[in-house]
Image (cartoon, rainbow, N blue to C red; front, top):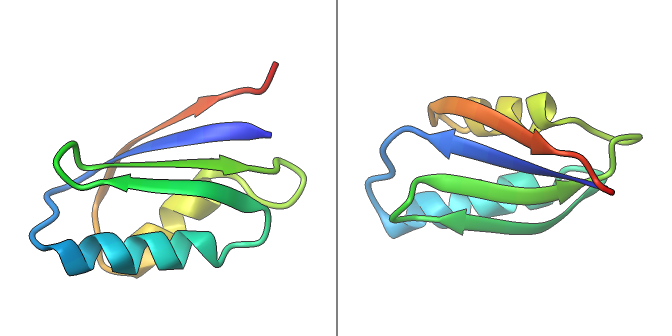
Length: 76
């Protein structure tokens, strides 16, 4: 498992948080999704054999939100 940390553009309302969280959670191989509203970040664990941080970013973009930066922490 790896961890993706995605820096988002401005989130304007709590419903944004719910929409992003559900969209990312629905991806195969993704778990432990946390959307940090005030920090404008999404953190998610993902199985590198099933998805990637770029695919998670694409989901968020497809939902209409800006992803400014993607960081991946590899599992040890």
